[in-house]
Figure 1 (cartoon, rainbow, N blue to C red):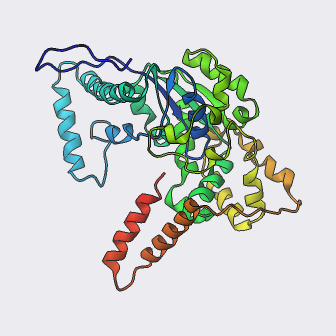
Figure 2: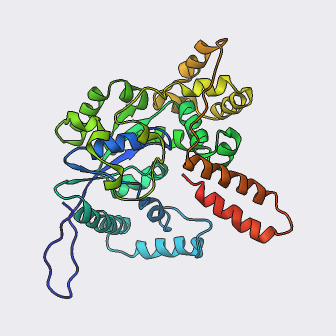
Length: 355
């Protein structure tokens, strides 16, 4: 898998199809933990988030990039006209996209996978281009991981924005973006998938990992669940991913399931914000991802009236960096005598705060 046919000088190597496995989930929904488990399997090559497919999806035929360094409208129209003159029209375009992906993922596997035969990609932003991925990877395996939306957003705000819910929502409204996209995918029947809830996975990892293995078509390996004992972070390919949470444990943990309840009970302003966020989500989408509106607030209602004592978060180098970025961004947003320089600083901070 990921191998290339032997060629003569001057000929192009023709890639074979790579067996692809995608973990689909929003930021802070447990995808890095699941990736670590899967990557501990003897047949699956994991690694950091490659972010390869989102740019490819926005080249022009499928979608566009409003601020791309080219005329995106002209490119989109020109590519559509060009593609319309190919022998098989859009089918040829999808073949070209698949060939690109086969080369990129295939050579990655050649370089790092050893005897492993399945390539795993868990980039969270892939959840926002699933219709495109279904065209390019109709035969891939898709593991869809969902988490309680409020737990997900609480973790997102605390991990990347020093607990500032408002800044987190303004920067990236992950509930409003990811819940509808993932729900739409879960309702389709064109490609296969398995849907796993984060809470179910951490409570009973053996049962759910066995189901995932069966779906992917690999034997169940109990030891992979103890991912912290199977791999060292220093041995993994470098790249983006969860910088803090997954390193605190060596296997799935239930410790973070209800942290969001403490967060909201301790701060009425946060509660008002997330109630407004949830009000803008289609109840059908919430039910589809596994968290119906009628039970969504139950953990909070059950804890109402109880005294909440929040422990202090451990101050790490990463958290200090995030605080500095947020404060610099806020100062740059307000402008001042050095407006142009501050605008560049704000843009740089926005890039650093991306998921």
